[in-house]
Image 1: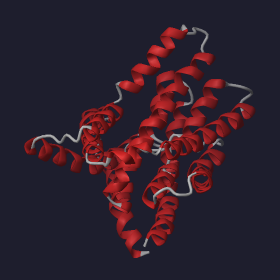
Image 2 (image 1 turned 90 degrees about the horizontal axis):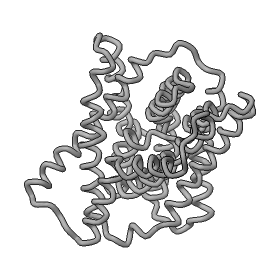
Image 3 (image 1 turned 90 degrees about the vertical axis):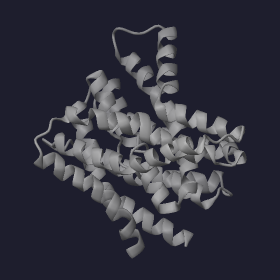
Image 4 (image 1 turned 135 degrees about the vertical axis):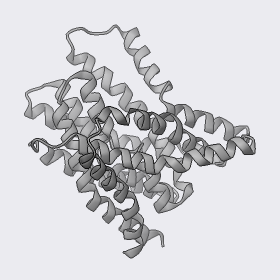
Length: 315
C-alpha cells in the first residue's frame, strides 16, 4: 500500500499544487495557453514518439485488444447518451456532452504519466495506441451528433473533411504515426535529437498535471449538477469494470501491463477536452466544467484504489 501511496502522491500532488497556485495567484486562465501548447504540441508528442519508435513492431498488431478497449468506451458513451436523452427529453447536444463526460477520460494529460509511473515504460505503447483510436472515435462522434442537433447542417463532404482534419492534425496522433513508422523501418534520430526528445518527454508529465490543477482552480464550482450523480460513478467505476470484464472475456492472453494500462485509462476522470467540446458548441458548458473538476477529485480515491489492486496482481 505504501508503494501505491508513494506513486500517486507526486502525481496528484502536482495537480493539487497547480490548484493552489491557481487559487492564490491572480493570473487569468489565458496565461495557460502557452503551457498547454507546449504540453499538447511538443512535450507529449515527443514522449509518444520516443516510446513507440523503440517498440518491437509485432506489438502493434494487437488489433483485438485495441478494438475491445475502444468498444468499452463506446458502450459507456452510448449508455450515458441514452440516459441523458431520456432525462432531458431528447436534447441531442446536451446528451452528447454528457456522453463525453462519462466516457472521454483524461487519457492525454493523466494517462501517460500515471501508466508509465505505475507499470513502467512498456505501458506507453498501449496508452498511445488507445489514445489514438479513442480520440479518433471522439473526434468522429462530436461533429456527427452535433450536426444532427444543429439547424444549419453540414454536407456529408464537409463533415468528413472536418473529422479527418481533426484526426490527422492532432499532434498526439501525428507523433504516434511517425513513431510507428520509425519502429517499422528501425530508425532512431541522431543522439543530439534523441537527447532533446528525452528532455522534452521528461517535462510532459509535471507540466500536464500542474496545468490540470490550475485549470480546475480557475473554473470554480458554482453548483453540483444533478446529472453528475450518474455520470461520475459511471466514469470512475462502471467504465473500468466494463473494460476489465470485456478484456478478460475477449482478449484473455493479453500481456498484464497492456491489460492494466487499458483499465487504468478507463478509470481516469473526465478529460478537460469535454469542457472544450462543450465550449466549442455552446452547450452544457458550466456543467461540463463541473464534471471535470468533481470526477478528478473523486479519482484521487478510485484511481488510487485501482492502482493498489493492479500492482498487487503484478507483484
